[in-house]
Figure 1 (spheres, rainbow, N blue to C red):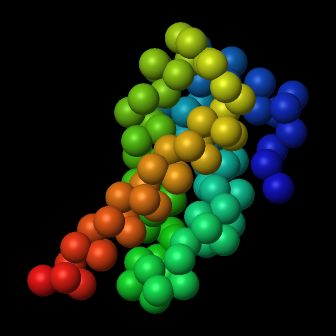
Figure 2: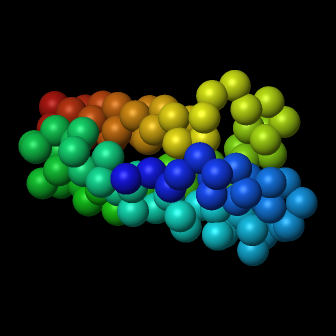
Amino acid sequence: MWPNNEATRKLLDDAKTGGTVAVDRLLGEFREPLRQVIHMRLDPVLARRVDASDIVQDVLLEANQRLVEYLKNPAMPFHLWLRHLAQDRIIDSHRRHRQAQRR
């Protein structure tokens, strides 16, 4: 499901030195696997109100903004870092929609 370690390592190295095109390529490789993970983890009630692709877009935007920080100190594999960001976004979406239901 996730791109293999060697391909990911190459993409990360390119992103460190290659600018926006390399970063776009890196994040593009993870778009579909990330969408699948988010789709599987979304609560069915929430999934009727929020599309997994919207959360993917938010995760990739955040990843793009925080990539330099990650590349300075990659404390975990890249795909796990993305999954962590995705899980945070899923929780945030769930909270927002639960609050909206209470109003």
